[in-house]
Image 1 (cartoon, rainbow, N blue to C red):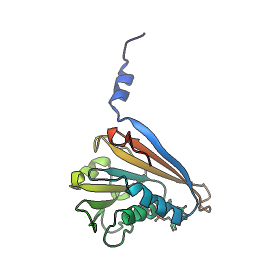
Image 2: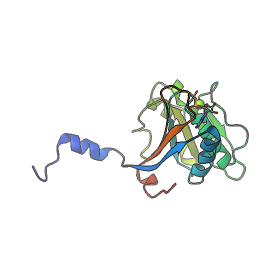
Image 3: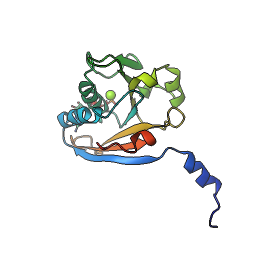
Image 4: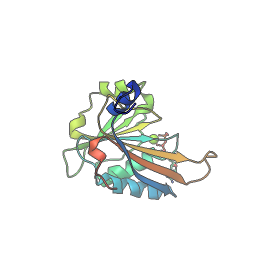
Length: 170
Ligand SMILES: Nc1ncnc2c1ncn2[C@@H]1O[C@H](COP(=O)(O)OP(=O)(O)OP(=O)(O)O)[C@@H](O)[C@H]1O
Ligand SMILES: [Mg+2]
């Protein structure tokens, strides 16, 4: 009936608005790194960026490019021995925090890490998951690889959730 709102529609209205910002085929690791540099120029304090993709997809490769673009001090590597690593930067007090969420049980545990979200750029490597509740705004970067795992080609899809990303053009 016109004008009525079903419970399911009401629920959807509460979810963050999403917008596909970039789709790109990435042919090798060097190109993935360059895309990281390019994306990083739009990042600022308070941003939450989630990197989604299977093992060896290129999440850390992209994170390294983002780290270079943000002029972080020291190497960005897979945060294997710590769940979250804070990288200071050369020209900014806004740190980049790199989180390996594969080792977290739930999004709620991300909240428990006591990251200074407001004053940091937070990158989370994540197998698959939802971030509703942790933040109203986040950027999802999904990297897909072919089924055989032999090709170097990756499909990159960048989606913004919430107002923060609604007017960003990568
Ligand atoms: N197009 C590509 N983009 C990114 N990496 C690529 C590409 N082609 C080949 N590679 C290689 O794939 C590997 C990706 O490893 P990387 O550690 O970045 O993946 P990951 O998604 O972080 O994996 P993990 O799940 O283990 O954290 C690297 O060895 C990289 O050189
Ligand atoms: Mg990784």
